[in-house]
Each structure stands twice: as structure tokens, then as C-alpha cells.
Image 1 (cartoon, helix red, strand yellow):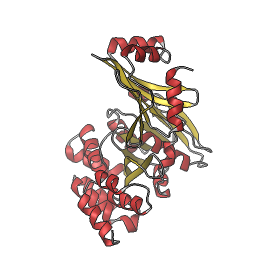
Image 2: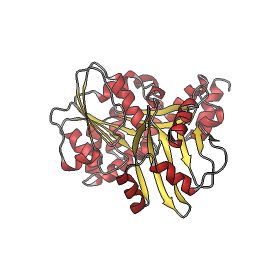
Image 3: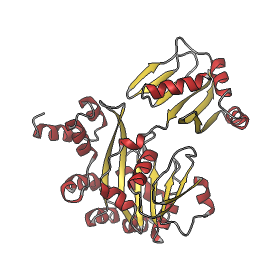
Image 4: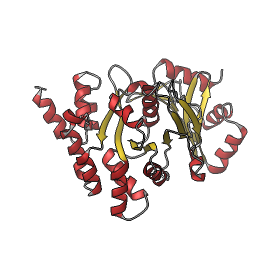
Length: 341
């Protein structure tokens, strides 16, 4: 068994999320908010090269040393992981992020999966790097089983399991979207990519009457909606009208250190009711968080603070974690004071 496989198995046993490789330091494992050394003593740059040579193909090694960086997805044994390696003055450094059952972190309401399965419209999943966007796609697909839908998934996550019993799933590389080769029979088109070049494509597909689920690498829903407009074609007014005419739902994600589990999912949820669509058409993005918060009881929407409050009440996260993740700590404090905390 090579050293990388031993580290991966140790990470699974300890419920870790990421293995960090840095020369002249121990190999470290990220478990929630903690970094734990999993080797005795430091490892040298030469040792890292030897470890990687056992898991990379010749083409991958050539790409790494020619471009000084390499990203991708691999599976060793039963463990899938994303890797991100770079070459700097100290040698090869990087990380491996385990692709475990993060889909279980998300407990989205049934209305979210119903929105995705509508006959037409645009649904967005927004979140920063490593916020669980792909796992959220997996969760929504799992909740949509038995619907007899034809689903086309454009993603470069080759070794991940996109499953939804009772539906027909086809997996394509995201770059195929550039050629316009999209199955005409697909009831739902999923675009899961860290790139932002597919915003216009997703919006046009939704305008054509297709059902589309797009992931975007932005900090929160408000920013995601603003940047979506920036990245699409047309005048400001026409872009706003187009988005307002197609949007069905938006999810803004966070992965936080948990109490019962190393990671806990938190999210903000937006449904495109008349008030939201009016705000989008007028480009009044500042009102979006207020609309999510004020419409929570009648529509199922929720702000991130409302989700953090619920997680605190269920003892899923620590108080410090909630306030660090809160976009408006004073508002979260007010919610807690109402229940005597």
C-alpha cells in the first residue's frame, strides 16, 4: 500500500475532509476546523514527489511539471478525492479533498427538489470554494428519484456518483457545452463547474423553456445573482428582465465545523415569488436578504441567519461558529435573545 492510500484510509477513519501536503512539514488532515498531523516528523520535497509519482499517470506528471500545477479527481481503493498540486520554490505542494457522502449534510426542503424538476426555469446553487455545491446537486438528485426524468449532467467530476433511481442520467464533460451539444431529450440540464463561462448558456437554455440547474462559485446568493447578470449578454435592463423571467430558486451554501459531525451544512434559500422577481427586474439586490427573511413562514424561504439559528437550537454547531459565519451577527444575536439566549 502506498503512503497516499494509507493517508486516505486514515482520513476516512477520522472523518476528515482534506489532506495537506507541504514540504518540510508533517502531512496534515483537516477535520472540521482542526488541522491534525498524521505523520511523524516532516516530509521532504523528494518524498512528496515519490508519493505522487505512485498515483499520477505519466501524462499527469508531464502536465504538472510543464504547467507547475495540476488539478483533477481520482479514486484509490474506495476513496474518491479532488487533488490540487502546485510546484513552487519548495517543491510540490498541494491538497487532496475527500469526496465523501457530503450529500447527507444537506436537508433541503421538498420544495427545493420540486423547483428543480419543474418543466422549465433556472435554479442556482451558489457558494464559495469547498461549500458542498456538487454534494448539493447529488442531494437534490437523490431526492428526485422515481420521477422518470431524463437528466443531462455537465460536470468534470468523473469519479463521483450522480444517482437518482427512476430517472435516466447521462454525464458529460462541462467543456462539451462550448460546442452546444446538448441532448434535446433532456428534461433537466445540470451545469456543475467552477468556471463562470456558462452563465449565458444556462440563461438561454432556461429562456428556451428548458429546466436548468447551475452552480456558481460566489460567496452568497445576493452576490451570485449580481454576478450572474454581469456575466450574461445584453444591456443591464435586458439582463435583469431575462433573469427575472426565468429564475425559479436559489440556494446559497456554507459548510461549517459541526458538533455531531466534522462538517455541517448551512444554507440560504430563495424562491422566485412576485416580490423577488420585481426586485430582480429593478436590480434591487440589497432587498434580497430581507425578502428571504420576511417570507420564511409563508413561502419556505430562509436567510442564512435563520438557518444558523435553527442549527444552534438543534445543537448542530457551536455559538462561535455561527457568529463567524453570520452575514449580520447583530441580527443573529437578536434572534437568540428572543428565545432567552
